Amino acid sequence: MTAHTTVVGAAVVTGGAHGLGAEIARLLVARGHRVIVADRDADGAQATAAAIGATAVTLDVVDLEACRALVAATPDLAVWVNNAGILTTGPSWETDEATRRRLFDVNVHGVINGTSAALEAFRPVGRGAVINVVSLAGISPAPHETIYGATKHAALAYSVSTQLDLIIRGERGIRISALCPDGMWTPMLHTRARDPDAWPSWSGAMLSAPAVAKAAVALLDHPRMVRSLPRWRAVQLRLFAIAPGLVAPALPQVCRRLARSCWRLPRSCWRGAQH
Ligand SMILES: NC(=O)c1ccc[n+]([C@@H]2O[C@H](COP(=O)([O-])OP(=O)(O)OC[C@H]3O[C@@H](n4cnc5c(N)ncnc54)[C@H](O)[C@@H]3O)[C@@H](O)[C@H]2O)c1
Image 1 (cartoon, rainbow, N blue to C red):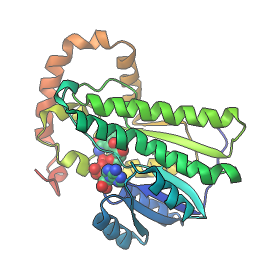
Image 2 (cartoon, protein in one colour):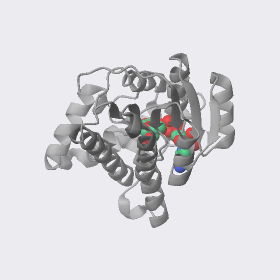
Image 3 (cartoon, rainbow, N blue to C red):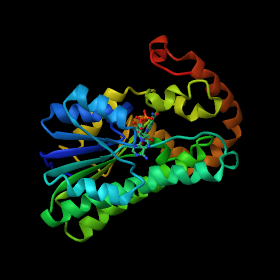
């Protein structure tokens, strides 16, 4: 997509209480949006909203009607950021069914619920922006983050296909962008810092939430169907996805080395980590 659209109005950030979502919310406030921090963690949403000058709403993205109600209560809605997400690690067969279903509920249906609800407001007026926070785990295999990677593949396919559906229907004023970052030092990984199965998260660049949030908000002025961070890593992982068999023989050794590397994170990273 080449046309640039500057968007103003209210902005909803799901999972906005912590981590990347809180950083995106902070940048959107600075950009002049009326921001709604929507999170299932009510206290966290309140604290973040109070700190950045936003409004807090308790929302579980799994609940479509709750997403629709939030849209209905936000008449000037211009931006919806589907950021809420959860991670589980380990081979798929070690992940119990309830956890597998919860991951798909939050990471896939949560994105579909938020996007569908936002489109109910955006399509009648022909404009609006949706940013879907996916992951590089959405573009390549992510062994030991297997179920997480499966959900992110689904979220990415949904995001890009929905944008294409809109284009086919001639609804070009609505932009849906998928952001695919590498590992990010947020509470999601703080709790995994000593989890050897989280090695894919340490296998590339460890990004900061403010840097990724900046890229997310930039998508409002320069929409992209897919924005990967960093780009070199996306190229590497797409090659892996094309020919996983070429890399497979080396994986046991790579996996063991990377599982140890989480112990060697810079000391600054450990500040605030729970372990
Ligand atoms: N941290 C990483 O390494 C990394 C890398 C790539 C992509 N991502 C993605 O970035 C997004 C943000 O992750 P993060 O690292 O900031 O995680 P985080 O755990 O730090 O924050 C996630 C936020 O989502 C909220 N949340 C979880 N389930 C929810 C639900 N059902 N409804 C509403 N809110 C819910 C949590 O309360 C929390 O505030 C996620 O989609 C994640 O998959 C993370």
